[in-house]
Image (tube, rainbow, N blue to C red):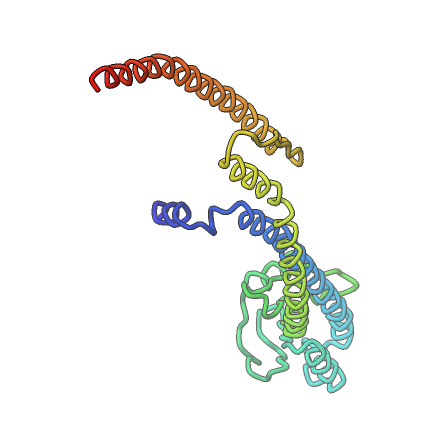
Length: 286
């Protein structure tokens, strides 16, 4: 594969062009940082939004856990006020709330699906034993799950666990909106960078075009004046070497012309004598 790509680059005049490579480099320098910065901002926003949503939901859950502990809801789960608060909290966060007693039995479920069932998970067990909250998010972050202990305020004993799941759909929707707007900005910036790159790449390779013209002009003879293109160190070095070559070639050409002139002069004298002698011989014969 590398051989094919190398052959394609070697045979393509466009890909070998310095102007094209400068253009591509400037496009990459302009686009890649913009994309990285945009994605970093979006990821930071998503992380921050998840953290804030988790903290808010856990604080609300702790307040409600203290309320239902005071009302003895774990032992008597028919308190309409508590049930209404549970449903309201789960509705606010578009999630689900399970209340689990000390025997890991579900005494209340806002979805009315798991009441009376045994609910055991790593987070629930840790929360029940340690009396501290535990948080977990699924791999794709579609929702956040956390367990909040229900504790007796007098003894500090954990009597149950409030297990809640909160949807992150609103955060993901916001991220999608931000990403779409960001890509509009990126595309607009890319178009701007595209034209800037064309202009700058053309400007940067212009001295090399002058080098080419100077070399082409030198093909007409060695009488051209010395050319200096000091735009870059490289072009100055090229023209210095080229001027030295032209000077040496001019000296060599002058020597060649002088040699030809001398030989021609030296040959003219014996030829003239031979011609006179030939004319004399022909005159005598006549």
